[in-house]
Length: 423
Ligand code: SF4
Ligand code: SF4
Image 1 (cartoon, protein in one colour):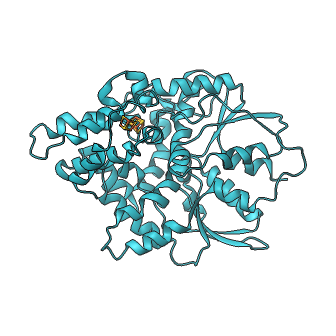
Image 2 (spheres, protein in one colour):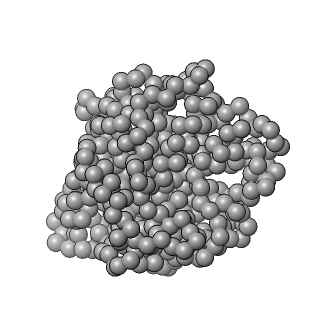
């Protein structure tokens, strides 16, 4: 973790030119200067550790950021607004600690071997008591008011069995050309096991043997984004060890946010003198997002002319994929050359959907306003299906589409490619 003086020095590089203002999704909805990167950089510059108002004044403003990286992308001075804001959150957490609900979720839920699987298994069995099916849709909504969950919210529901309870170890390809590890991620594990299954089937069918360690955990991003470095450091150690044994060529994550966390943030969690740092660097070197990996192993279009329908598909860029990992061409190319799909670009496909991890929980109404622009763009595209590769974006887009009453599906890109190329 960086020292306060270091973080403030980075914030001071902001010359307050306002170039990033118009692009900030939070500023666009609120028109409040303190909530744009320029305002937040000024706030970070003025942080004083001995200020008694330290928490109250800063916490709320710093929490109203999606960490989308749009300000950094548009900054002519190379100010990484999102990274500075996350570091400032970490400084706050170090000084004041986490809020109680976050502490309970991160430390006693994300970073445990048994509690999360047990609680979510029980939740899957009992969810019908708290949630009711939404007519004609494959989703649920609350029967009763609950803390932190808005009654309007679309909830996909938990799978009866988590993916990792019935699928782990090696799945060997017939003519093996490569050996990879599959990082499953929480949403895919507990809500949409079909995505992990699609990735597994697609890889094995195309000559890639897949190793799935049962001991793998959440990537740690929800805690990291909230400024908690300790929990993700502990989780990172366990994930790195889980993939260490099998001499893998690559480690593939199909969720863009997990991929960015494993590849970019794990090495940052270990200081220069930490003996684990080298392991984290070697692990990160092997990590790849599925959309970057797939073009290397897929044989190309078969059976049908690519890009000719009958399904019209559009694509939403997850911020973690486009701005953190720099991947935006590959997912589009994959969709364009997949038989049976007609790819259509939506307006502002790279604009943040408003999910932003805990931002969506703490600032739900603001998150919905940001999402509204995305939902309109999806509607205008006239696509039947909207694809993306981040599980957080998927949940957010499902919520937007449900609330707008649109008859459209949200699917993970890997699922689309798997289904279209199965013949
Ligand atoms: S990271 Fe995104 S939400 Fe946060 S200040 Fe920058 S542009 Fe705005
Ligand atoms: S963060 Fe960059 S673009 Fe935004 S006001 Fe500061 S210097 Fe200008």
